[in-house]
Length: 142
Picture 1: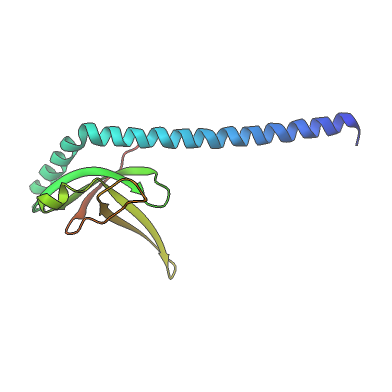
Picture 2: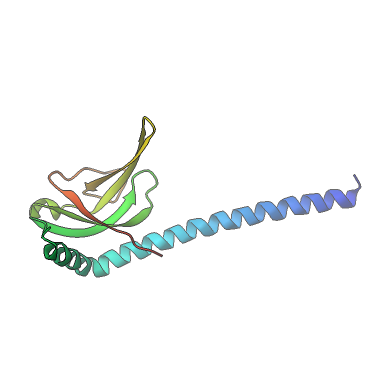
C-alpha cells in the first residue's frame, strides 16, 4: 500500500471515530437537557398535572384516597430522568417523596420495571418512602 493510501485510510478512520464521539457526546448532552426539562416541567406544572389526574380519576369513580403529588421518575441504575409519576398515600409520607426510582429487573425471562417512591434523587442515598404508591405514570415526550 502506498503512503498516499495509508494516509487516506488513517484520515478516514479518524473521521469515523470523530463522528462517533460527536454523536455520543450529542446524545449525552441531549439526555442532560431532557432531564433538566423534565425536572423543570414537574417543578413548574406538577401541581396542575396532579389536579388534572385527580379530577379525571374522580370523574371515572376511581378517586385516589389520601394525598397525591407529581414527582420525576429517574433510572436508579443510570440516574437519567425518564418522565413523571403521581404518588399517593398519607400526606406526611407523600410530602417526603422527592422522586420515583425505576429499577429494571430481568427474572426467568421476564423484564420487570419496578417503580419505588424515594426520599431523594441522589442515587447513592435512596430510601423507599413507606405507605406510598405510584398511582399514575406521566409520559413526557420531548
